Length: 161
Image (cartoon, rainbow, N blue to C red; front, side, top):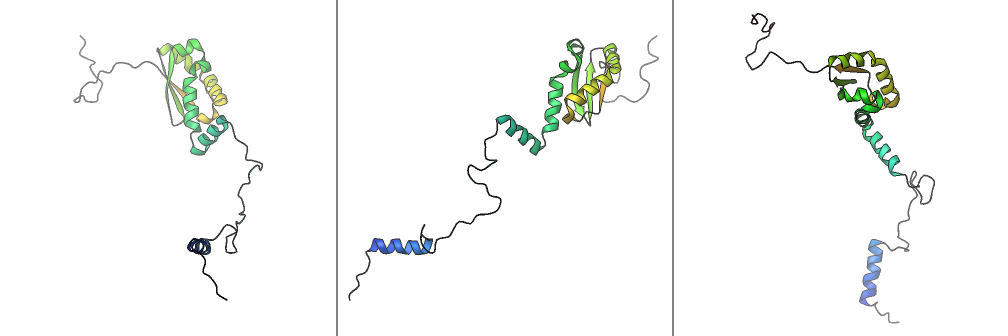
């Protein structure tokens, strides 16, 4: 009995199938079910809202505290009121201390009297900001020390008459 060899294209196909494995061949690798992999249409595969995704990203990256601080500074007028916010401005937060610059020393004194109210409102509305205290500053006073060659001391006291 004379066996005829397979045509060349069939021989190439059978060799590739042996070498690389066919989709349904005996040497094909079977897919293993690994523990913890998700299945399509399984619980927990539903899409999330954009707000939930951004909140999760901010929490995982550690951005909640800086975001809460910037939100606190942006909503200063809601915390202290419109009239008070017209005469005071939050400058920044450093080591848990919110620094607020006021238009005059009278406004700084008035806000110092309201410190517990302001701190309580901040702690309730912005707990992630990490504000422990608030410092109120008056306007900057002019400095008599000018130039690179100024020396420490009492300043120009006896030069006025």
